[in-house]
Length: 62
Image 1 (cartoon, rainbow, N blue to C red):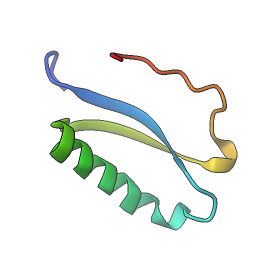
Image 2: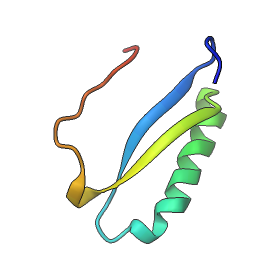
Image 3: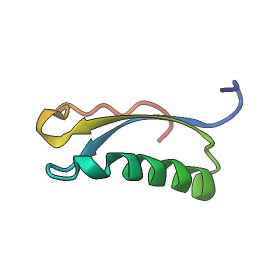
Image 4: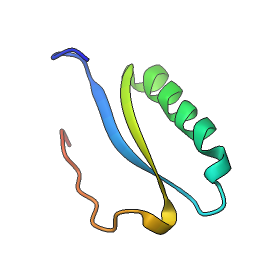
């Protein structure tokens, strides 16, 4: 990661019953953010919907 390059750090909530698709979902998000937004460095943490954080906080540029 470089100081002047865009990066994404996010928690991704996977719907109940879709955990088997988690790797494909993560790959799709990484591909889309690179192709559509030009963000090549992404750190994605996957969470099951049953254990997802209820108090979402947005940090960064609006």
